[in-house]
Length: 468
Picture: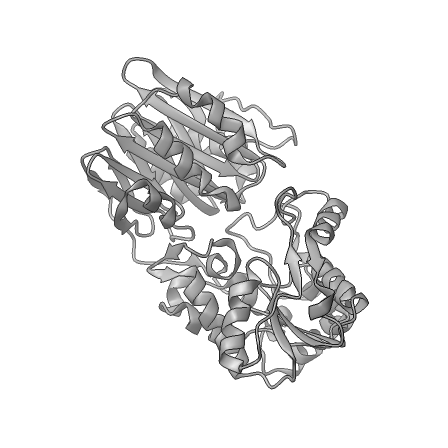
């Protein structure tokens, strides 16, 4: 994933840009950058690796080198950005939140026209640079942005910093959020709505799907109105979003409380305590505990002062080691207990299996697992959930392959997404055995969507049911 922040101010903007971008640190772990524009000095840009290092420590010493009243910043898991571009549109800086599934064919088409790309260290093309090249194929920025949104298969939200203002465009189906904030002397745009609150901004509005605007300190102008079809990622509420984030008017923390409560209403397990797998499972667990009457407890604590996030490292062995080192058991709260753990999801299952094993080793009598979302059966086509996560690495797909005795069709896979079917029950039992849980019960799709509380047709559920 990645997250971005843009600001246009009547005064120097660098501190707003610095702190606003920093509030997106939970969305990226590898690259971060800021670009600003000043009428006298022009564009300035800085990009750093933030692997194992907080964003703030990389950029705080450079703040004096960023004069300007407008700027954009990004924290990303993959490509270095913002990208600074000089073209027939003039000089501009661009940052994106995107997943481009047809990048190879787009690059091949553009290269025919004589455009060249610089490969990143992993041999891939910087997707933000690719988007800039797509925009440059048209005569003006607005047509260029619309063209990029149409030809990209996946998702694309972006911001472009120019001398006259900041262009902001939300993905054509609104798969990721883009929110506007305002203050007497400035305006901003960002992925996470809470990122500007402590800077004195108030909510202005969310962009609609496919909407394109340009803003300066005084005003926001809609250049392309929003479309009607919306498919925002439901996993934003389940996992990605920070507790204080609000998407489509729905707060992440409140949604997770409702999500946990809905799970509890269908459950009849006997447990001594309910616990959340930190961090994103905690709020789901609070909702479950409140609805079930089973006390909430913290039988293991996440140690975060020096350990980086374990979700995104490319090396699976390192990911597992970090996940293990970060979780510290509280033996007094574990020994002899029947524990019910709520996690946001089960992807590969490796970390949750190891968590369960160390709970047993610490004296737990039983470990019951309740994921806050349904089984992940299809790989995400629209967000960079994890670059190394092919569909066949999903624990659900491994179990289904075993049950079916080989490769399966999408039609058969969808049969496993019906929580009332026998195939679904056999799949869940297969996962339970592989991961050594006392019991396993996933949240239902209808209950999860009910917890979000917006029209289901506005939500993307592809990873759970394979439907667009």
